[in-house]
Length: 232
Image 1 (cartoon, rainbow, N blue to C red):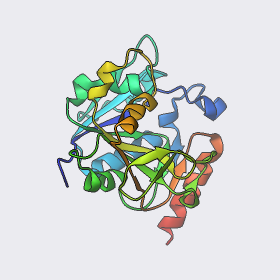
Image 2 (image 1 turned 90 degrees about the vertical axis):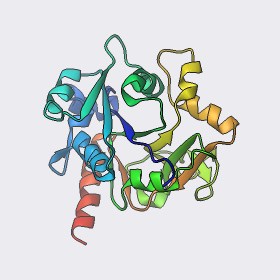
Image 3 (image 1 turned 180 degrees about the horizontal axis):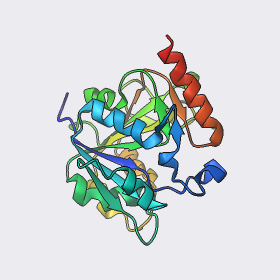
């Protein structure tokens, strides 16, 4: 592994509007799949990958997430108090906690089977060639996703935007460009655009199944997917 990152940003600040009534009184990362919160499923991935510096951002119903993590002394909280900063602004806001080196980022509303996604990324990461490395999944290995896909790439090669593979919410990023973006709240798409223009955003495919738990029906889909693996 080449200069493996040792910090991870877990995104947990969103409103969860696609979950409709399920998130009226509970933040989406605390919704349960197979008896465990989505946030805990994501932390299982992080812990199994051996990443030591962990940061979780909060905004919507932040007190519930912070209470849920109160016993985890190894997790720092990046608070977005006055407004939600989206993925790009949220990552920049957390940089004092994450440090200046490349970081993993992981969304907290997905379920996984197969190899650990962060370990997969770390094994391919090459900072001499890459400013970013995203993990995608082929449509046949995805559940609960609506859309035509996000990126096209050869395995381990530079990527381009276009309908094909689906972004899984896991990646490694260099963060220097974040300081050049003038907006307070912005998507990581703006960071990707800069990397794409330089030919330094790369992609690899997830070795396993993946489920988007962004809508209510995604909970049952994820539980079925996990049960299929558990039952062989």
